Image: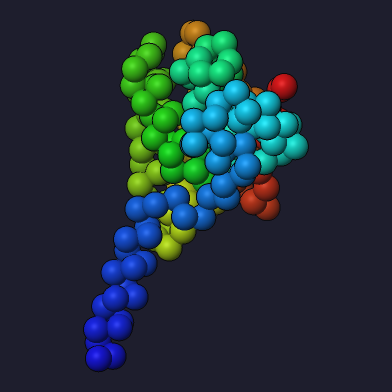
Length: 180
């Protein structure tokens, strides 16, 4: 009986590890997921402006796909990068897909691979959140350098670079500014 309960708990933890359980769902995200895009976009924009990291994922998808807003791949990449840096594994997957689809130079492939290594290797088994503060320092610094000097056509992301450098040493603070 005790062994069965222990196995059930272990199975639950492993099953939840595949989900983004630890990602807060904001009201805007809920509206977006329900398909109410017209109502979701202004709320998501306000949530992002208020510093809600999880809202960046849904708004990034909207800009990536041109749903409810004019399609803007650069803005989508900035928003999705912010969500990925905030620990959202779905955003990590979205960034990797964008980098693979628009592979403009070897830096895109390097960044794609680094996000893959971090996304798989630094995920909390219980919450599913990607925990960058324990990622290898050399990888975080390499990613920061790429975000400061990306492939032609990719947006420079100084805030993402600063966040990655901060995570690589000293106090673990995330500083991301997403222009409105």
